[in-house]
Amino acid sequence: MDINRQTVLVFTFIFGPLVLVSYAYGVSHTEDTDALWGGVPVSWQTYIVPFMFVAAIGFLMYWWIAFFQLSEEDLESFRWPWGESDGNGLNRLLLSYALFLIPSALWLESTIYHIENDTSWTPILPISILTIVSIGNVMLGLLAYSAHQDGMRNANLMIAGTIMLGIQCILNDWIIWTLKFPW
View 1 (cartoon, rainbow, N blue to C red):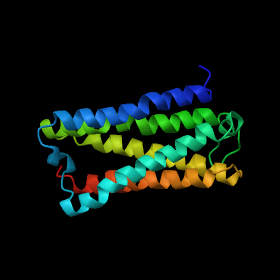
View 2 (view 1 turned 30 degrees about the vertical axis):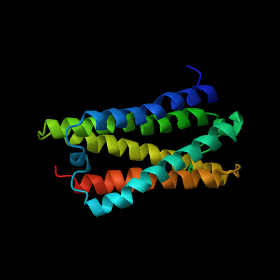
View 3 (view 1 turned 30 degrees about the horizontal axis):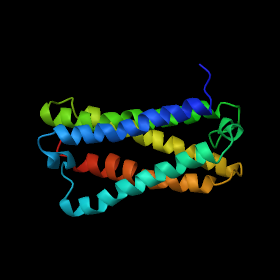
View 4 (view 1 turned 90 degrees about the vertical axis):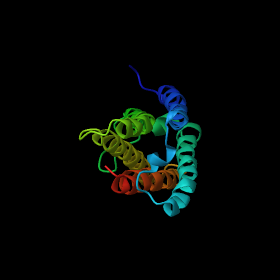
């Protein structure tokens, strides 16, 4: 399959909203929405909720710049900061988005599954999912950083977008939520 700008854009058009739908569906059918917060204190929740919106803005900043301000050639030249450009940048971008978006759409349901079926192995699901999401977030950041190294326009805003996303996905979800959840 030939991965081009349109392929990655369509992927994000499908899986980006699917994350939001999965959250809406999960919250709508869970019996105790407070249980989804685990052991995160209410006072912390007032800090975390606004960062959900900051993360969404960061995601959209990155997405907008990648697909509507950079050329397809720029995207093809995306590389890891330690490597050389080889024309496979769109493959890297698709992989990064896939590792970020697909597990994000599964996280809430896996948490609900754990709450409803508390066994010794069910914590592995949400923790593993959040780990993969965090890896995808870091990969998006590495691509943005290499774009900055290569002097691409607005790459610094892409880096800012991944940091905004990382505050929620890595710090609040993967680290704080995982440590506070009553496994």
